[in-house]
Amino acid sequence: MLGTPGDASRECVGQGCANLVAGAFGSMGGCVTIGQAMINVGSGSKLRVSCVWAAFVLLMIILLLYPIIDLVPVAGLVGVMFDMIAFHIFDWGSLKTMATTLLPEKAREQVNLHDLKVSRTDSITVVVVAVVSIFTNLAVGVGCGVVLCALSFAWSHGKEIRLETDDGENITGENPGEGSTIPFKDLTEAEQQAVQTLGLAEATWDGDGSLGALPSARKEGEEESMTEEDKAKVEAAATLGFTADNWDVLTPNKIMKKNMNVIGTLFFGSSRVFEAMFTRPVIKACPKYVHMHFHKGEVTDFSAVSALQSVAQIFKDEGSELHLFQLSLDSHRMMSKTSKLLGDVQGFHSEEVNLQRGLDWVPNKTFGSDSIADKKRP
Image 1 (cartoon, rainbow, N blue to C red):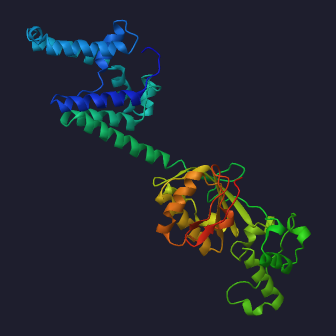
Image 2 (tube, one colour; image 1 turned 90 degrees about the vertical axis):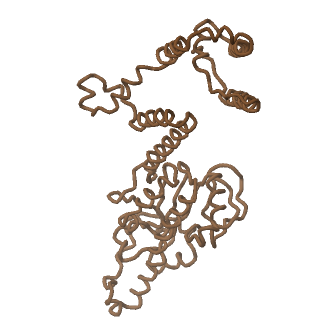
Image 3 (cartoon, rainbow, N blue to C red; image 1 turned 120 degrees about the vertical axis):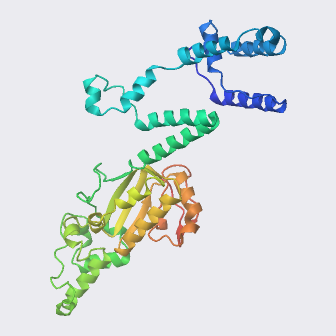
């Protein structure tokens, strides 16, 4: 009301200490006296000392002037309470807002109330807190309200997680996204040998050329008709992560890796949504190496780590490897602490786990059977 900042923590400590003292003397504890504050400000008060003075005067009335207070009819005191609490303090406009929330969109537009709607969850929370407080007490009512708000947040926030390409497009079954080529020098010795077996020189591996077509007799039951050279090409293609299922998808750009950017918070409310994103078309279009970046995402709890383990296992079954990049310091610590509960987390490779922020290096940790080597943060 005065436009000055408050300190809720200091007020809570003060109120808590006062209630402890009150309880020690067998008297009733109190809550925040909004009505008293309204009276003080309305009377021209501007400093916190007004609250102290009001409390002191009330104490004097209780200790010394109670014979006079006894002469005031209870009905008069109730009338004062109704006037201060029900009339002056209560926000009557909130009833109109809550009623508007229950109306459908067309009805709100007809009565010109389309800009008054708040979340139905908020309205339900207000009603629940009021009803529970009447039949129990204020503490239980507030507790129920906090639980409802927390569940509502988890439900809505859990739907916000998504996967994006480097171009900012959402990765879906209809748009699985493309990948890119790992430089020849970064390939393993076996992969470099496979590139040469397929007839690609080091100079052309990073270009826009094509790997060509796999031998036509690559289907089940037709292996015997292939020559030794054709069999070697099929084996080389498998070494590079190219199979008969994904060859047509991956050939044009000689894809070896795909970047997936996790946007949002991965936690118990979003873990199932996250797992459901990895549909068959998305998995099929993934190359040997899948790089999952968390520079705009967080891993916050055990459910999130379990979801990552499930996704990593899916990629492993398809012959791909899941590599995690740019984990925040908090995410990395949490995953390190919960890794023993998961057993062997396949697909989290030591050389690929980097920090987004925090330490300049990561001490050796273990994600299941894979250790995290020292790594400079990007």
